Length: 393
Image (cartoon, rainbow, N blue to C red; front, side, top):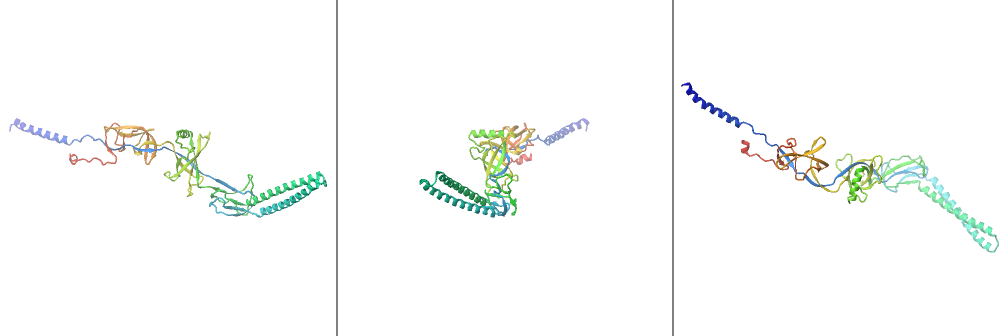
């Protein structure tokens, strides 16, 4: 076959092979990247109240130091260390015998003074008849009148002595002035205790009331001003005009599960710290709270308002600013800077920067980029299924 003729048959074959190879190459070329899928959800709307949290300490409503009013030897102790005592329960007994003797002596002196008074009264009655008959002089009559007055004063003094001796005898029994938990005894029986009203009296024990119990804390001047303005608007949160509900948690608790009420706010701001003292009252029937125990109290700091909340996982950080990613109507990711509020049920309150209809990216933040297009999937719905034909292609 001539060379020119063979080339004519070879050329179409090469072109066919080239076209076939080109078509195979085009079919194997990967398509462009598809938009990433992210999960979006609208902010949760809920009626909330902002709360302020403060650290404080429990204090007893009543705290009493048990001290003797009379001096003497301690005779008996009538309680167990640390037990609950009721008002009026007998706690200590001082040796009564010296005080019983003093009372008996005071009663005897009173009887003597009364007998002397009876004599002077009879003597004065006789003198009145004698002075009328001019049998005795006016001076003698005045002397007998004066003797009667002295006898009356002596009776009054002895009656007071009897009352004092009775009180001293009564004070030998020391009873609980309040209901509460008593501490340990500071003095054992047989020791001499010093009583009276001076500063060197002997401390025998202490009693603190437990139910109800108070919780004291301090808050800053700015919070105080905010509370006062709310109070002027008829929304008292400090307890001055009414009893405001507060909640409390202990150091080993996660939630604020103890309810109480504000009952006092001090009238002076401390000049050294710039804080003012507040107080709440809690029931303590189970005896869980003890004076001196630390806790954290939560006080309402705003009226009720309609809040927007998003999951904490949907919030990003850019240096000192917080932001969320939203998907607009064209499925384009937008970045919005927001102001955060309190945390409620694993959701975060958004104070500013977000609208109720915004679609917030709650899952897939690493795949979403501001300005890029995404495939938004509503939270709580199943993803769109791909048809078998599309899958085959």
